[in-house]
Length: 412
Image 1 (cartoon, rainbow, N blue to C red):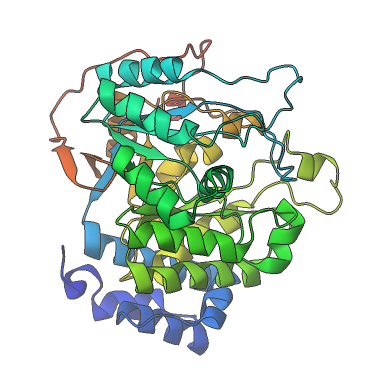
Image 2 (cartoon, one colour; image 1 turned 180 degrees about the horizontal axis):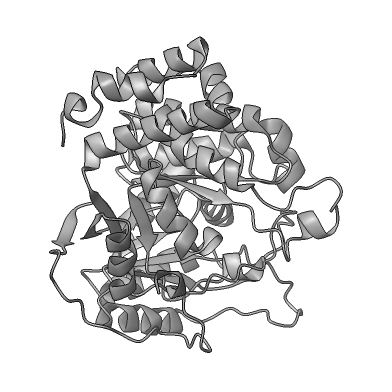
């Protein structure tokens, strides 16, 4: 970790703050002194433009460098979505299918294990497992799947089950969230994806999800998991019917949880993919077609500033934004490229064209192209391998054919 003064000198500050209004400068100086911005401050940072936006991006990157230096991390993992059948009716979701709908699937426990074994043999340290809320799914499925995976692959980390799935499983089993989660932990659950958060603002959330999983329930489940020693990620889905005020409320909610539990490992902004989303297709005059480039820049940078000292890792979603856009955000407060994935269904079902896998070699090449040091990590951000500047990385073919597409074509 670098000392603040080696990252951000007084002369640096004087230069970057030229032409910046007094209120924005005070907010940023407060951040550089490890004092947290208020919710109103966060909203104000989201509204910056021109020189003020440039100052926000620079301060975010100073804070990143202070913690991580030039290191940028990633994990070798595989996404496994065991079913896309879901009846919850979230308006933004293009992933869910009805039982009798074309393309509906529910793969067996044996198939999930087979895919996990394939991932392990390709170097994965993690499997990320989520699925729709299938009406015929028994409550025992979640624990049965964990037991089968741990029997076959005792050393693999299982990152699984969003708060929505925990709500559903506990309801099916007639158990408290605590009892249900404690059982899953004993069966092998290592950590949880903090998805299904969308926007943790009641007004917006009700419009997105019909309040099927309220903000209060999401927070309760996450806090319960953390209290049991089950860490999780934290996410936000932005760029639809939301605004900076709602983003500020969301970030403030996340950091309040973190102050209480310390259980979040990373924060992951997820830009809304609109192409095949019912929310957009049914309301094209009311719903924005995803976040603008300006909003994407600021979401990652302001998240770094707002969460400074609480959540050290800000991850970019290359499946939402593409590899080139993700690479560019490594100079705006982002320190993690996420996972190699091998398979990706949820963004693709909403119309994303950014592919299903970025291989280990490609991750290293992307990070090096940003003049950063590639670091392979595990799910909980322990370093597995740091790649030397002159070190060659074995090229492996992607698991799923790309039909001639190259996610790294921008490097040529």
